[in-house]
Length: 81
Image (cartoon, rainbow, N blue to C red; front, side, top):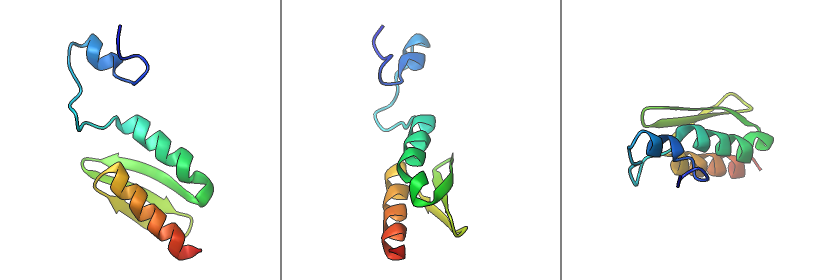
């Protein structure tokens, strides 16, 4: 079965195809956490089209996509340096 390596096996087994712009939220949140936890960011979540992270100072950073949130975190992190 094709799809096991890229996280689409569940979609293929259910005979559904993932849309080109659909995001695997669990995978994206895990990647964000792995990339930014050591930088002091935690509490990653996604609700609807809002992606969030909490800084070590308690500031809530948001974006409408995982990439937008990453850009916001990167800008915040650079401003703190």
